[in-house]
Length: 370
Image 1 (cartoon, rainbow, N blue to C red):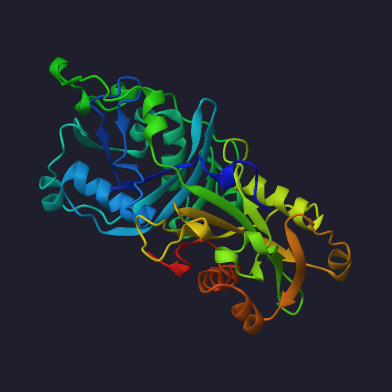
Image 2: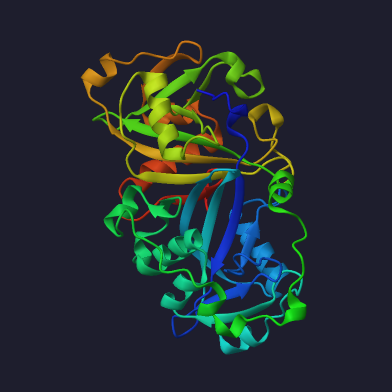
């Protein structure tokens, strides 16, 4: 079901990189124009020409530090809601540890980076602003094989609760006092290029959807058919997993999945493990994208495990008539036939991820990356 929130628009996206050194310390940078929160990790905002957050991370590191890192797996995805600012979905990636030679080759862009240094986990926790501190320290403290971590406002949710407490507080915030090597000289304090409100207003937006993967005891997948006007390019029929747009300013993807299941099927079901994160590039990054599919901008699809449905649940389905025409349980052959190719790839990846112990699989256009 599509929300009234302009189809889930209004979401900012960003990507950062966790650079460890051989001693386990973390690379942090100083933002020369940010007087309130000057310490950060390398990275920045998504641009429409970026094919994925992974590409955003690579571009930002090249621009900020003058090097091309070798990115490892996705460390976490964090959905951050804050009053007075659009929601932000933030990806953090692990990078391979920098060698001394690579570190010596760093050439920061002075407009973006006023300095850099290595901090221990404890120092980084105190130097970074509280939300970013919680996000980064969660990645540093959880076992690597538990990733990618699922976070909401930098706090663990979903499978991440098996590894970390639900409400871990951030260390006392000290900012530059916890990173003495980053203290700027007086002449290195330029004014921000834009005030905060103008900055957020000028940033590009993505859309987000939350879907649920339900199967029966035979492993068949529950699909729903949307009314013709909701299908790409007017296709009829158009099948998909249950779910729809995230109401960007009011809810997290997990909350959206719960709401969509209730509205579309009439079930009160708590979404299970986050199985897949599928980034669908928009038209600026993918010539095959088409505005009729909602891909005039990038679309991020969260797929949650809905679990195994019972006969009683199936008998109680109450379809949302304004949006849906019918439902069907499909084996893999039929599901592959009914779904678009990217949707089937995403569904197949989510089915495979059910058996894993870690976090969601990272996808771009339905295909695994990283």
